[in-house]
Amino acid sequence: MRSRAVALLVCWFSLAPAGHSQGVLDNEAIRDALNIVRDIASQVVFSWGNTQDSRYGLSIDASWPKSAIEQPLVVIVHGYSSEAGEFDTLRGRLREGGFATAVFDYPNDAAVEFSARQFAAALQHFQRQYPDRQVSLVAHSMGGLVSRLVIEDPDIAGPGIVDQLIMVATPNHGSNLARVPVSPDVWQNWLDGEPDTVRSVFFESVLDGLNEARLDLQPESALLQRLDSLPRNPNVRYSLLLGNSGPATREELDELRRLILSQRETNVALRALGPRLEELLADLDELVDGVGDGAVAVERGRLEGVDDTIVLPFNHGAITSALSDAAGQKLVAEIVARLSRD
Image 1 (tube, rainbow, N blue to C red):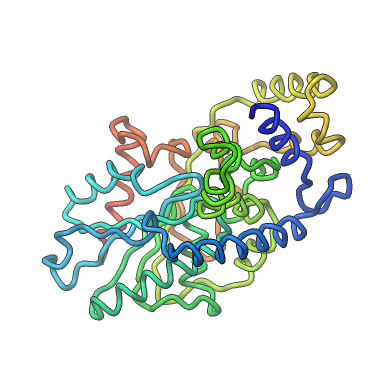
Image 2 (spheres, rainbow, N blue to C red):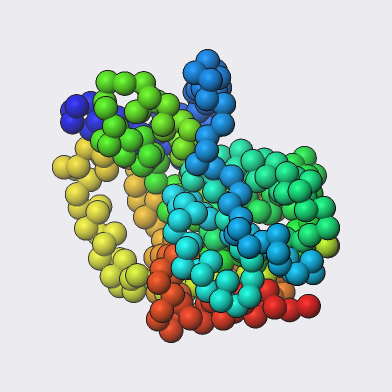
């Protein structure tokens, strides 16, 4: 089992990011291959009589129907490699502030468009149930991109019930960390499941995403270029909260870069990256304290047309933390202040 798992991991490391001829496949070829796998999986799911994954969808507070008609539902949209349960503390703080909450759960690393279409369908179902109610979105990280597609892209055309989008640590222009070509979910499902069954490796990994989102999150990806071409929705109030509490100084990052490069001759995964390794390590502002939050660089998070943009001293995972320190409390206060505006 372990030898096969190592081979699988090395295989994923050998796939090339966009625009590099040294690798085996480019991003479009990778995406095409993953789409074929997903199509096959859909047929498998249908034949097994399991056409809907109960893990995903819109989960709403039971008290919501009793809330005031003018009060919007606050829907939290999680990000990459995350899930709804990580936002229980935030939901509690928002409830304390008098807000009814919901969370939209989706395959955490599937293609952004795939998740956006699921979200649009969930909002349409909500609108049929509550035709006179409005929705405010609080979207973390990649959840902001999912949300932007729903409210900005006419091809997806979510219902016009969203009147506010608060993005927290959203990589509107991508993250260079997404250039590292590896699929953690396939690796994790291999280790956690029964290695010789289709369901544990193939089926579970496909349902939860095959890390197609990594391609979307790379700077200048086709998805980000598509979003860049879209105007902001004039019927939605936008806010953007970016963090700058990265985990390393530039000096520490330079030392880490030297250490990694020194290991490439003896490490098979690093050697597989070839000359691309230096390029991958060249710009990692995402990790630098003062200019990134550990996953998103401030300058790659900014979005044209969003005047309400502020930079705060929080790290990328702060919104899913206990929110008890000064940074967490400030972040919650800024979210609540925007939700409270008329």
